[in-house]
Amino acid sequence: MESKYEVLIKKRDLVKENKHLLGKEILENYSMDFDINFTHDSTAMEGNTLTLRETKLLLEDKISVGSKDLRETYEVTNHGKAWNYVKTLINKGKDLDERIIKEIHRILMEDIMEGGKYRDVAVKITGAMHSPPSPTIAKIELDEFFKTLQNNGFNEIVCSAYTHGEFVRIHPFSDGNGRLSRIIMNYQLVKADFLPITIKTKDKSRYYDVLDEYGINNNLNPFIEMIWELEEEQLDFYLDALKLKTNIDL
Image (cartoon, rainbow, N blue to C red):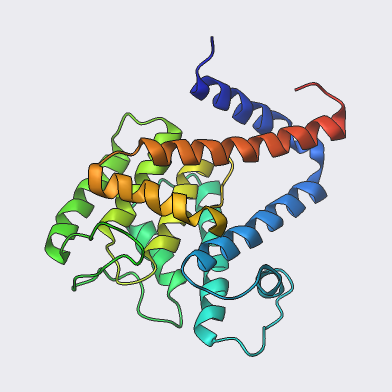
């Protein structure tokens, strides 16, 4: 009997080998739709009030949204820029490292605050039960985090969960850690030929619970399971589209 991981790998490989059959226009449409939803979901998770339609106007149509706070507008446009930057790096085969993470943060914080600079004060995570380490301890744990990214025996799903969970637990920046952690989670997924995922605000309670479970009890399994489910949903969407388009029983 195949394991859950083997099933997911098989679906990933089927999508990778056959998605070109959908055609360039459809693939570009799917990609833009994801980009807009990902940006909207991730910024809304942090309290941004721009709607999905307003996010589309900013990212796809390049039309400004009136009567909105400038910070909220920057959060959305910067997230779009940061995600595009990540996709460019992945296409170049770059592995995630400290320099890249600092640059992603700098892009996320453009016109909001100085980005790419680690915090030197204690912070709290809104909605979380655990508290991030002090700046001194955070620096030590960050060093270990980056070492682990370069040398670990994780499979791709576990690696993406660890990357997000450990980074947001350390909370190295004074702001933007949540958006950044979801971007680098997807960095690891896409680098491993999986599809990027987005966490909807309707799943916010579960999302915070699984992150707390890791932050308090060092138990990453519930978050791994959540990413697993979201990844399989994305893969199944593409496989269903391929079946309709090609009449091939994948």
